[in-house]
Image (cartoon, rainbow, N blue to C red):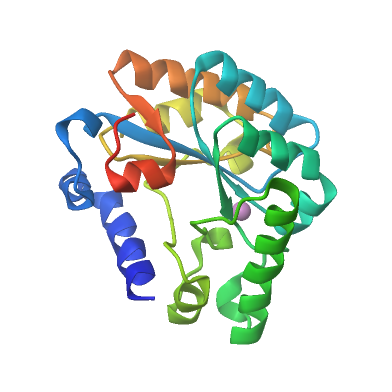
Length: 217
Ligand code: NI
């Protein structure tokens, strides 16, 4: 439980301080790693196209899946896992968890864990609460690292590839955790632009867990 809270705080600290990356215990070989994270899928149409792009680019990412979408699209969840991406738990029905009872929060995590395990054989090792809404009850019930983000592309709000890419590239630094949504129409194009821009600046790509463990990317 303590670890989860600490991780949330460290991740939040990363938003304002590039120095915080050192707190993850990076070696020099991992110094230029960033993590792309995709929330709210799997999406029947867009997630497969995004996976094609990531495969073509040789980029490994993290997908925070919504349980009811996994139940609807288990084969896409299976493909995400089989292609080497990390899967995290993003709740069952995408509520604001801080408004729920402890029992309801626990059910959101547990039902999603079960759906992801049924589809992929993998139990998620990280969670992300919808809307980043966190309190002690949420972090304690998660029982594993709660991952927020350093920068959001706001793809759900603006649907603007230039805006999304600029937001990320203007803040590019080691340890960056980028939030995108694989159920938004611009996701493939924004991801392509962001990958190209980060690569041009010398960054490589990790899953969230590899990033936090300081593994090379
Ligand atoms: Ni979400």
